[in-house]
Length: 297
Ligand code: GDP
Image 1 (cartoon, rainbow, N blue to C red):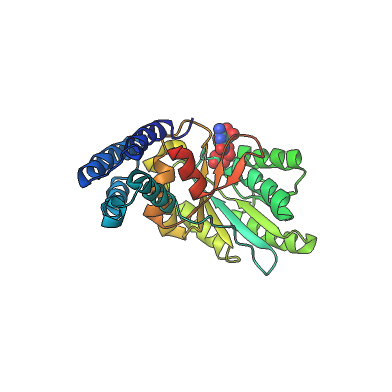
Image 2 (image 1 turned 135 degrees about the vertical axis):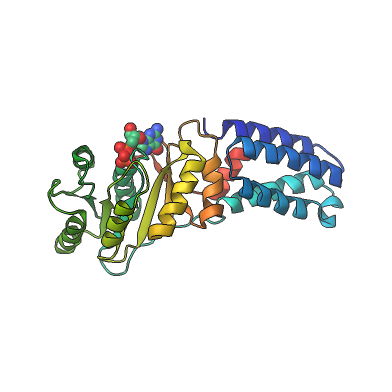
């Protein structure tokens, strides 16, 4: 299960402090030592851990908390608030354009789950937002990726714009946007090429696609199992092309939680969706508060 170790440790720490009738500075310090350890074990970025611990300590050691009737519970609430804040605070909704069509670019490294997520997102937007999506196969370097998207389209009965591997991804995207306009499909979701590593050529191609019609969303798909690597990838993509949000995949696995807890703070970009399985309905809007509650039990 995701966050298992982190959850167990934090819950243990919170139970201890909740049970105390009085809380003094030493208690808070002891708690923060445990919280720090739990976060480091979960592979959270060190700078993020430091800031997080500092914020909670400052709030928890305040007189009004210490003097309250239920100091333990107050401290636990502070931890939950800050954990929610760390993951982005309010849920951030997807942006749709007032000018048709809305264009969403899916970017990310190979194997992160980009193509699968493209299908899942189209399915979710149709079901929950009443959108009419067009899937665009722009990963021309991997014929298997094109086929995979076509299969997903068939499975979901959704149109896929595919021109094989001979046309440039930029031209495919351009034609796809025109096609969507003509067919009154209001949401174009472009499955761009993935590579094994971040590289210049890929970034240039993504910039060229971006320049066709400023996308309403550029979602970076990252694998939550890759921890701090996912955070580095997010930083690189954001610096090169500017992402609007992150989709964190494979949260149904046993990820320790480092990516989920660090990405927002490091990149300032929100996690908008999480992948919870391989099936086409296994994509959920990300709710920081619910996730914090889940972790703290
Ligand atoms: P791409 O190379 O980034 O396009 O990655 P794919 O979409 O081909 O996905 C790679 C693998 O990850 C596939 O086997 C997917 O079924 C799997 N996958 C994608 N998202 C999730 C998820 O949220 N949970 C799980 N368990 N598997 C996922």
